[in-house]
Amino acid sequence: MAFDESLAARIRDALTRRRNVEERKMFGGICFFLNGNLLVGVWKDSLIARLGPGEGEAALREPHAKVFDVTGRPMKNWVMVEPEGVEEDNQLREWIRRAEEFVGTLPAKRKQ
Image (cartoon, rainbow, N blue to C red):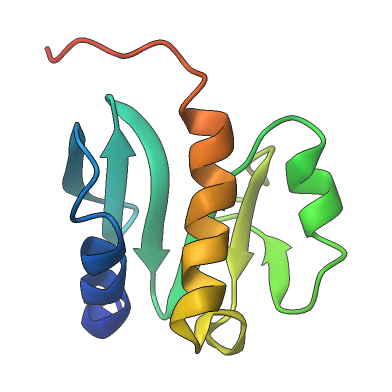
């Protein structure tokens, strides 16, 4: 399944100065990890973002934010942001910032 390469490039650009960021293909898309923890990604044409407890639930009330569910079970504290919600770079950077706010508090995972 293809994913939006231009959105992936915009994320890559937004994360270019961050240390300890890597990307991997998953879920039929591409995901970006911070210190080994999944941060954000692209699935089809949408952004997926990992948010903190309570933050994910609150984000679902925002325009263009939906439950992220690729397996038949919604992923708790994950949101899928439709393309209209990340059209502008400042919108994309804000979702990344929100994800970093939580993921940055998690202990680093060691490479296996």
